Image (cartoon, rainbow, N blue to C red; front, side, top):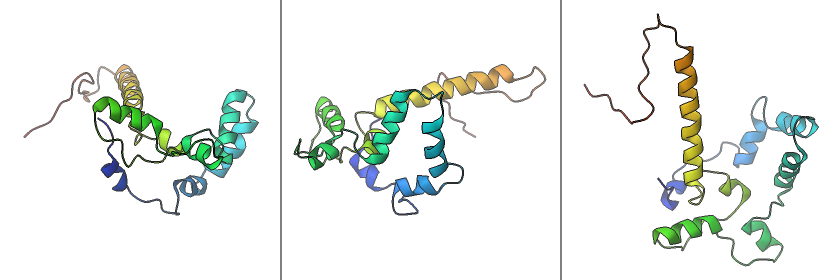
Length: 151
């Protein structure tokens, strides 16, 4: 299922003005996370570098490339490619920002995010089923097919 432009306009608005501000004001996340992550010796340098680039706003996405006059169009290239493959209009593309390409609202990343979601769900389901005792009365609906409960 691809995210549509109309659906993006219907999402809730951030409480503090931007999604970044919302993240920064979360308890035990935000600023605390940004301080712990780069100082953790277990984190590879490439991950730290990517975080620092994201914070500085210099990830080479279309919006940044347009800001540095290396590109004129700020529309998302991944969304454009996905819409061209579907044969739909490529007008009114959302801006290609670091936040956009890391969200499920990017048409080009929607299938990747859906696959990651299902992978996590299947792992969680298998873990819960493995931890279930024979005396448990709780029965899990299979994860392989969608089910609906009708009365």
